[in-house]
Image 1 (spheres, helix red, strand yellow):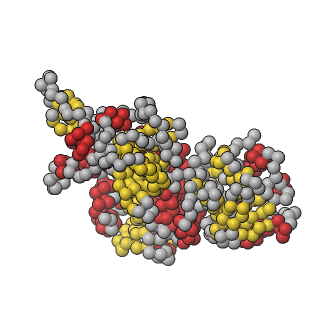
Image 2: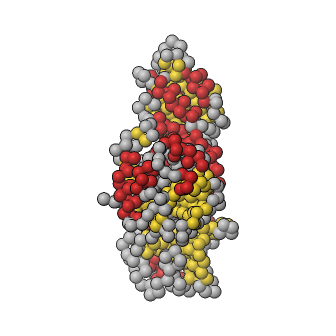
Image 3: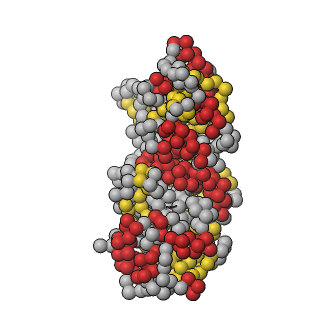
Length: 627
Ligand code: FEO
């Protein structure tokens, strides 16, 4: 039975998942399977983008047959000839005779190398060069060469009408799709980022310059969706993956921290690695440890792309580097690792030599700084060598910015509190209330659910491109909707706004209520998201291009997609709200202590503990005043 996904009225995912494959390309474990994506348009001419691995041929043919119905297949675009995407070409061509192949010159060479086909290539092949286009009726496709991302014949395709980039291997991941198709249907950061990194580092890691060239080409396109050959389709918020690709392809670390890989036959080298890791942690430096004889090389390669500092600790074996460590180092050099600081530890009961051999290999890589301090263990670590480990830890620590050490040694919450408690600077919270703010209703939509909340931070940061930033408290349901959908509207409130709007959008959660239930008008922006046409002087629609986590809040950077001027009334300021809109506190009848939230006006009766949190707006005790 077919198993397809509709992406647009005339575009379908017709790929398949493979959970029986143990090792992708025979070398990368894929415990969570892998997807082979294929995309089929039913335009005036039908056009299919790539095929699938032979393991899922049957399902793929069922999918294509179902979507085509009685129609013939007009074009087969072959963007990449690696057999995980091309193995089904022969069967497809046999089934849909008359199909025209659309591919690069190099791909045609590879087709002829891989298959003996009864196919008139002369007559039925369209050879594509950079910037060539192909029209299928409503859609015009533009092609861009992407050599070595990940083979030399690779090209990517841009649908100029739907603004979709078919990106071949780029922006994909290991892992089956499990019923989802879009990246926003899952938690990429928590559940998939490690696999995206492992996929990138191992599949395309060697070809950073070529990936950067593809990113450069993509930056000139107005992209609304990215359809890769593996993993999820990106339909919003893809700045996150583009940023990761930018870091990875430039061989820049994602995080300051130390990756420690060790090869230890009887645990003594491991012991030294553990002690070093403890010392680094004591200095507030993040560490991640791998036993190279247990953990697959692909995972450690990915970790080397993630962290800024690398430590290799290896026993000496057959007068060389221990087998699994030597494999790892060779693999790392082959993947072109660059821009890292490295420390080395060796062990050898009679002729330790692994440290110098590891250094020799890594010195071939670009911009690798190898620390002078090296620890050489004879069989097992001795007490007097603890200071040598400490010297390595200190040398690594000296290479870290002070802010990173401080930040990584405490939790985010601790860090936030420490800023207040331990700072020598005298902080009067009232000073911050002198900052001028506006007040805005921020709205979002997820499926059929509309929601909104009050925010006070919206700022235009650039005019070209037209971008704004907003800060949104993570406790707000609207925040989660924006994370998921990448789109929002801002209604700029005016001085005419009644307190009821703040009660409506600020004092309850959209999880439990319909915040628009008492709004009589139903206006929506072009993005389908509601806005307030009364008590607002303008509406801004925006699409998120980037986001930054700031402990309690997320800072979203977004591109303006629509603006509407609604009135000439003055925008309300925070000060105006306090002076004229927020109800004045009532006199306590009981005579007990009463505190009012300076943010939303909530009144708390009785003592106010330090960890008190406003049940309405979620601000802390520092934002309450005695009344
Ligand atoms: Fe997914 Fe390079 O093939």
